[in-house]
Amino acid sequence: MLHMAADGGEPEAIDPAHLPDVLASLARAKRREFATDAEVEAAFRRFEG
Image 1: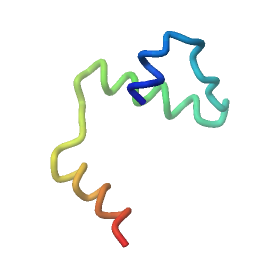
Image 2 (image 1 turned 135 degrees about the vertical axis):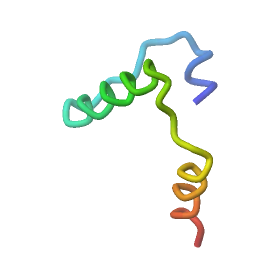
Image 3 (image 1 turned 180 degrees about the horizontal axis):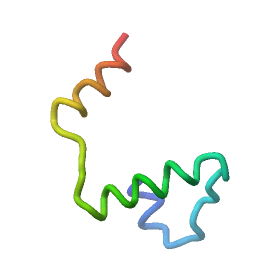
């Protein structure tokens, strides 16, 4: 992700089906509504085998 941000190239296209979720996420970030530590930990636990 950091490599993509530092590249300075063209932004990635957003699948139109994902656009509403992306816009909602950006709005939450603008309002500073971020996931709690517990929510982040729970999300990562889903990927543990």
